[in-house]
Length: 501
Ligand code: BES
Ligand code: MN
Ligand code: ZN
Image (tube, rainbow, N blue to C red; front, top):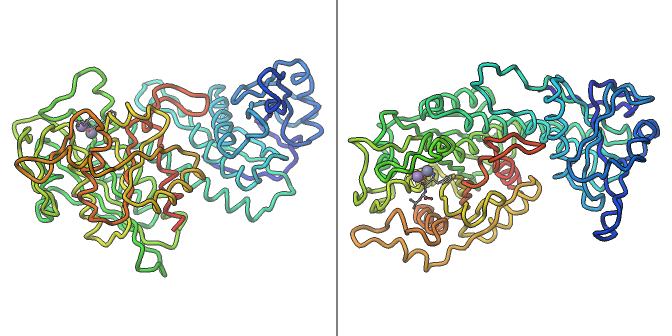
């Protein structure tokens, strides 16, 4: 998808479809106040073209409401798409992103190949912030998951034009557009990986995709197999991989810009379970097909590394993805088995379905061995996190208040939602083993926390953040701005966080 900045007036924008934002200026006047829909900005010809529609009362400016006007009077665009941005006083880059996604999906639904989106003038969102949000949102909206439908046409948009007021700071707008592109592409890159079924996204294929991506954006990339796991004594990672006919892949991507300080070094570790059957502690058949998305944490880190390579922050970053299947077989590990992780920790396997923490344990140790001073992991780790937070917030766990504060500032800019959950010492008692150091499951209660507590054993008190994205990595239904399927959630926050160093 091409993105073009166009500094023409709204009336002069020659587009197949031009999307503009309408805002409700009465929403702050109480619940019963009638909506007062007003177009953002004071473009005279636009006001005239939309006059009747607004006067009719059909437009309430409710968030993501759409109204289409064909051949709008006095405008060059063939269609004018009015999209609700909600309450004027609350309009932010987040709403802008969703409006842009809605515009993209609307245009695709009409088989158009391009759409123009106007930066709304006169709101508290700067032109640069709006441009970035429009581009990110348009990329999000442009993605559809029906890869293998035999009648899938090439539905992707060819181009999005952003109509920017000529008064805007052009330099700031252009820089923002670059950031928006890098992040939008990275998010879709991650979604693309997650969308593939497990027979088309094996650990080996994931490794190949990492190699290809890294070559394209200039990152160093190594992909190792089972031998390396043995050499590094990754008994915990291997215990999951041993049950599968598909070989595991340990993916290591390195970004080291010239002039970066020797510290901090950020280690990004992702769970790449390309299919989670549960292993011998097998999952029920109902809904198991969804467990192809159990590599979303790994895809998040690959997408983040791609954006980081393009945005070039002045900090060293190591991206590690532990990719494997979790299968039951004659070679699979069994409940009761004891496994020794890379750092010597002895793990009693209670449930082979608690495999994500097993592979991340060694991934976190390895990130430290490679020099990471700060650790971030992302994983579709627990159903318990979905029970706790639903599909709205992802879970965030950390041993460092400072790092959480830094991440929370980043997630806000990225427009993503994470909710911090606790890590008190009492939860550690729940995973104490009588035969080994630690058990890989603490049972049903507090399952998201005991999983995080397990991971904490492997960070050696380095500042660390764990992101449990089980509830948010997959959209259960279509929304106006995003298709059902992989969401690419967490990519934007991780990139924003790395840039904040
Ligand atoms: N991949 C699952 C977690 C998951 C559940 C992701 C639902 C997405 C949606 C993970 O490997 C798992 O099976 N966790 C178990 C842990 C339990 C056995 C301690 C769980 O959450 O039930
Ligand atoms: Mn599992
Ligand atoms: Zn899993």
